[in-house]
Image 1 (cartoon, rainbow, N blue to C red):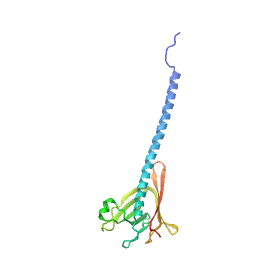
Image 2 (image 1 turned 45 degrees about the horizontal axis):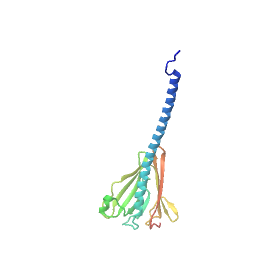
Image 3 (image 1 turned 90 degrees about the horizontal axis):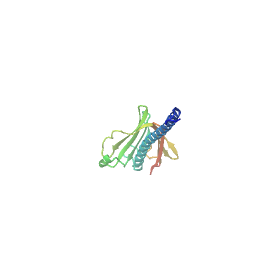
Image 4 (image 1 turned 90 degrees about the vertical axis):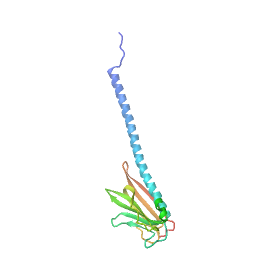
Length: 196
């Protein structure tokens, strides 16, 4: 008797089962890699926003004018009437578009509640050119928390109104992340000439 060539039903079913297991494990690996890539892209955007903020505010604070101009203090901060955080100070580091109008500006960072999240706005007023303050621009959106503290005379303060700048300013905030809930950031800046 001669046996005809071919596969039995059991062999075909085993091949299909093994192929299915192999494909499902490969799909799982690709799904995990894709989720990790999306999470890293999301975190990369958040870290980029934080780095831009810290670079900008750090440069402005390091170029802060230590003498008052007019009736405004050199640096003031705290909470607005609406209960949101703000920081305002004179700086010699001005935006490139404003540079031809003078070398001193009053910068204001203000937090606003919008649609369930917090948004940080930045505006700039040229002091020597006698121009109105610029329209506040969105600096960071999607904030969960935002706080500023001022260090002087051995202790931290939540607001600052003295004519003398503090020794240090600390920023801390959390940004909502689509994958990890929220990502915290914190940085402090020592003010040269700040005594409090």
